[in-house]
Image 1 (cartoon, rainbow, N blue to C red):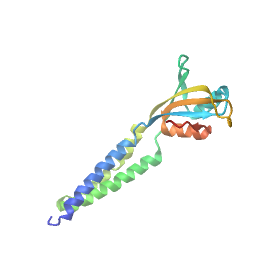
Image 2 (image 1 turned 120 degrees about the vertical axis):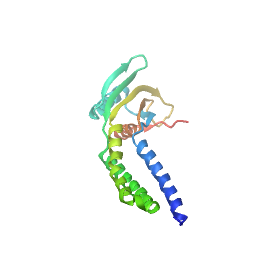
Image 3 (image 1 turned 45 degrees about the vertical axis):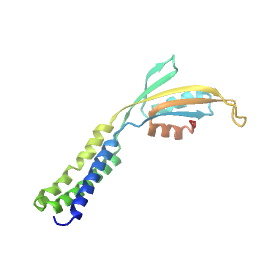
Length: 182
């Protein structure tokens, strides 16, 4: 181990392995956001569209709060097969790199260091178990009057709290406009 490049390569490889572990862990993190969306539809029509949208996506109404006029939907988030395979492949490459660096640093460990790659499927299993969970979406629809002469006098304002991917899909599917917050 007279070569000074090997310890620095090992140090960088360990840092990359730590980053990979954090990336795999972050793949299961909740990404809850609150969005306000504008719709040109009247409130009654919009409520029917929203109910149909959430029913089609296997959400059910779990609570209706008449006081705050908020509806709570609950559904089950299925894990992504693509992401599970992708994380497994990333882990396999990461473990392979770590094994190669360990084999160069400590040649006596070379025979079993390559066995680290066998741990790669644990990344996919971890993602699969942690990302399969119930998801809650809170929805509130209000009628608002706008001062803009080029648009209808009233619009519906939808305030939604849920996973950011679900909010983006809702906005895209129902062609709602995102209200820019200041």
